[in-house]
Image (cartoon, helix red, strand yellow):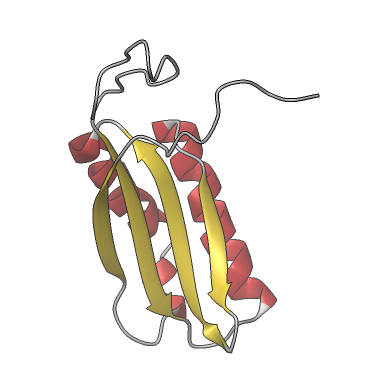
Length: 117
């Protein structure tokens, strides 16, 4: 990432951040499944400080994705994620494996620094 400069005063160097995308198919998109997954995500947020978002594919309601943005300690986050998945027995609600994709987060694209009123 480029350092802050006179031409881009809003760019501030950030520590390396990772965004996690965890996707899977659930056996049934029912209340019990959603309660277990959301409970697991809440516990993970308490332990890691990273709040996730639960998404469902628009045209495939059994395909779910957990999104965790801005993880700065990947090893600790991954360990805690595995722990809460086991604690909440999330895999019993799935139709196949959980798949995790991890992306290095870049600085946001700055379009303007000043807010116009």
